[in-house]
Image (cartoon, rainbow, N blue to C red):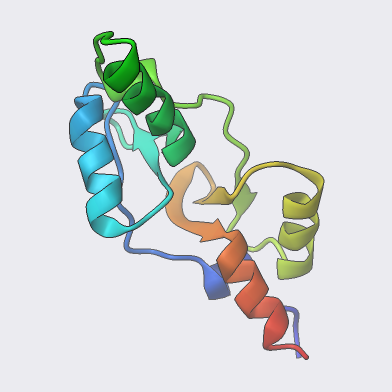
Length: 130
């Protein structure tokens, strides 16, 4: 039996944002769907960033206490995005989560975004091998 891969455990029905979307609207979407972050795609569908709850918390804090203005998602998203290939083994994905601070990795097939894998997904995958 071959090792499970990101393809086997990734989410494929994704919420995504565009860089020009209003940040408050994006925060509402994250809260509505009870997710901790989502990919940001350009007009051609290319991955250009991730918007996380941590990014949004900075906006909410700034708006609530500093009375500063907000803006588009592109102003707040993280642009240093670490991705995994759709055929990356679950053990390697787990090792990458353990070495880094990211909570999710966009999953690519070539250059196309095909899914998102989280720590939760990997934990579920590893548990099934006990």
